[in-house]
Length: 282
Image: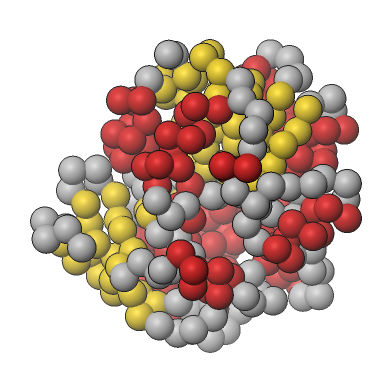
């Protein structure tokens, strides 16, 4: 732990273990760091839950159905986005590919696709769709990718700096890097505080702001071209946060917090989650 990092507040793992974690504020990078950080050989155990919805194709509950309904719409938008930024189809790498739906849709649209997913169950579901995934970035021998995407993945990466260097080296000059991450400066984050579901400790090791994304990527030769809001995230994260805070699925309260968060975002430009579009300039 860096002695200059100050305690932001304490939260816990609401999903699996109930363990308490501290969020430390890194003033230089304007980001939060989860402490203690689980050892790499134990990190996978924190993902072993049927409720970790992004690693399953479950549609058992009403919440599952909402998640996958929104996800289906979001997938179409993501594929449109990568095409718009690259101006054509090309070679795509998705880091943290989950169960492979995004890569499957991109492949159907003509992209040559590669993916990384360390979660074995998620990777098996992807393989059943015809999308084989590598376990680590190091296993990807291809380079000169036109587009690399990390959809709510950067916050999960251990050894962050080295992983970003690997990603940078695999992207061609002029290539596009697209990153989606939660924003701890959003209204819903400030409203729910330690119960904010997007802190998701310890699966989320890092918690980013706009300043921290610039601080990390611009010295590496990336130009931040655009920041896009993720409006649906405020509603979904608020719904899960209500469950963590009250033990109940308070749909109406979650809807109003999500709505207010998006309204605040229109003024402050601090939404629940952001998509950062960066171009590799060198």
